Length: 362
View 1 (spheres, rainbow, N blue to C red):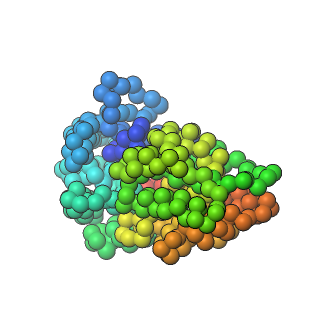
View 2: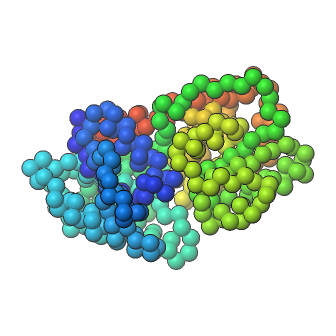
View 3: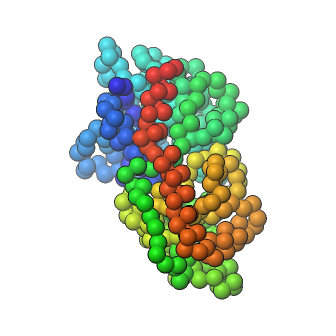
């Protein structure tokens, strides 16, 4: 069994992207590993530690200062480890530049965790890219390896930072317990389409309004559901044709997906999304959804043509929605089966096994 200390900059309560960290943590615990995760405390009045998940890192409400604040706590954690029996250490890339001294002398193997390169736009993005590259250069000098989200992400890391340490791709995953056989006994009168995640313009999220317009023009009966928050949230909330569910917890997200037919992947081509392994793709698969999205490496899975329809056309959604709208009852049940079969290869349990094998092998 492995003894692991995991220090993440993710906010485990409000950040939908934290599902991967939480899921891996629980899968590692379930397999008997001794793992402790520390994350930023969003609510300073909440000091309760729950089953190895500790909201012990300092937080800041000032963008650009959050990692610096969290690193002060991370430094103390590392300095206080049992030097005779130090655990394997996993560290979020955002914290690495601020705790270089502690990491350079860490008495056991440590690994940089990168769940994707900077996704912000503007000046903040440029600053983050500088720190991202710096983190990987530090890791290249002192770490035993790094955790990325995909093979393409690993190639980006090596080309942009010059890192040559071993890398292990850990894709977006789901809990095996959430994959329950889904079947239907009737064709829906209207196709329920859903998007769950950050509602940011740089994710192509405003294409959802174009999909609504297209549905009306083509006389295709659609109901549109979104959940999450972001810089385009208020625009979409003001559109009465779209049902905005706000921010949902992990269970509510799964319940929403089970009521829908098609999951959307609108993220456009480019460095950030082409190197990603979107958690929502695994979540859509677990719920048995058909998937319609833009065509690039970050959205592709092997042997997925039966339930995923990707396009690089300007109206990337058109062919996919038309295809699934005309699906027979047997066709829909084939989609459910194929998607959930794919999800069984994307479980946190499998990812946890892969992670432990990697950190023990380098």
